[in-house]
Image 1 (spheres, rainbow, N blue to C red):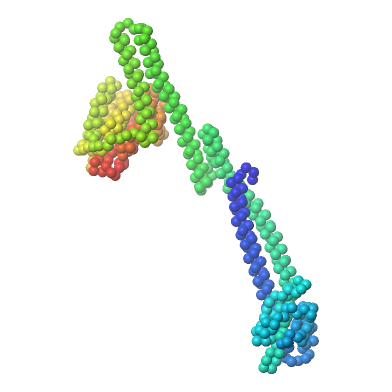
Image 2 (cartoon, one colour):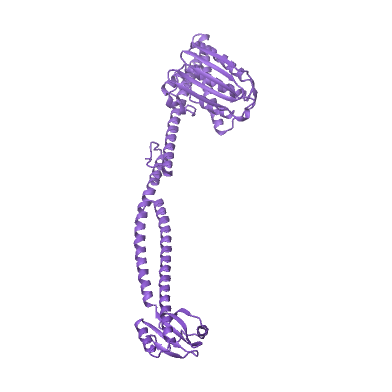
Length: 470
């Protein structure tokens, strides 16, 4: 799993959990078998002790040899102990001289009529299960009968069970390790692919895409990375295009400025009217550059949230009418009809007069610029809750696939035609941001060859706190 650290960590986590579960199960099963064998041995020893006790209580002297034979047959040792600790009867393989298992306290309990069971280890290290019962004679207890059963067979059985458990555990662990390696590789493979893809994207390979093969969280993450790559690629392309556009927009006026300034400096003109014409051109181009710089500066301030707003009640209908009058001459020169209508009762709305005029002028200039024939309709609708400003033209229109991006800064629709009609791709971005800052909303719909409709909605005075919506 070299180079796949997340797979290694995942595998280690799975194996750690499995190992804990496997060890826990092993300990539990071992305890179960140990308890089972212990109970079985105790039951067997108690049954033998009860049988020997009954034979001893019968008083038949012939039972003693029989008890010895039976003890040897069942592989147990019998001790018949009197109250003073003397051995009255012994049978079996255990050394009769070893009486370390006999304790005075135990004898007291046995002669009090209680049964005892315990495990004993002799000096040689051999373990025995001992059951002691009282032998009644007449109305009292005559002696105590100890039955010693070796635990060797039980321990051998437990050892065999433990060997089987250990072997099974090793096999299970090996299988789990193999399965875990496979699962860890399968689960971590998409993450490794994502890591490689993000490194490529970070290195500038923005065309990198991930294959999405699942609908789970990993598939969602892969989709998010693909979306990020698309956005970054579009941003890079837009930025490059913007820089090219800015270079083009600056190169033309700068060329004019340099050329006509040289003409004036060297006196390469014949009349004062020609001189005035050249000065007018220089003035126009200087204003063009100033307008471009102002737009960039305004947009930068909006991005940083540093643009100042002076909110007051303003006459939006007056601002709109003034903007329409400013553009009437330009529209007339292009042969375009500029129509303006107001519906509803015109009431002041909260806003910044300067910024509202900037928004209206941008939208109207766009409509006039991209309309070669027909008309531009401007409608201002007042309702109790909203003020709706609509500009609708019969211009070239905007392709449907371009509409989601028209408010992005530096974005220009139909790049080759955009240069023909002018513009830097900043106007609509400025409109969108200013409208948002003033609590409004802007929406543009369009069809190529039919025209464009731009709607701008602001809350009226009565609903100013609720925000505007379409």
